[in-house]
Image (cartoon, rainbow, N blue to C red; front, side, top):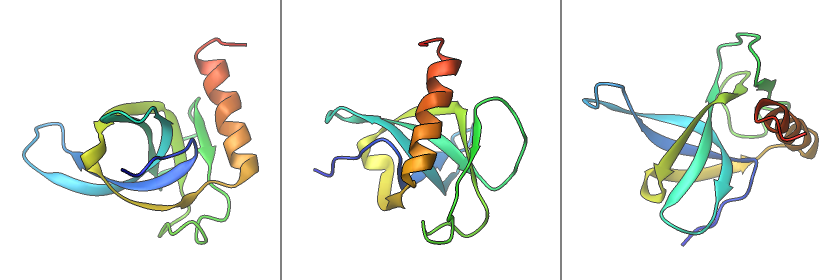
Length: 109
């Protein structure tokens, strides 16, 4: 069984809200405790300048097709089988920033 780390960039099978279609999308791993569930945050190419959004630096090197952003305010718990593959991992500075943003959003500081 593959174990994922905070900041890993993965491709997930993500269902549309109506559950009729599934699309492959990138996501950033937030937590993997080794059970059937993995918590991820949405990755998007649409910049919105909203709280909880961080830019992914060196996005091409990470295997992403466009300049991308992690939306830490859009998290989901997925079954491990919905994670299709690991692309790469965020840069250490992006990981530090993501942790900082999550702490602030969850009022853990």
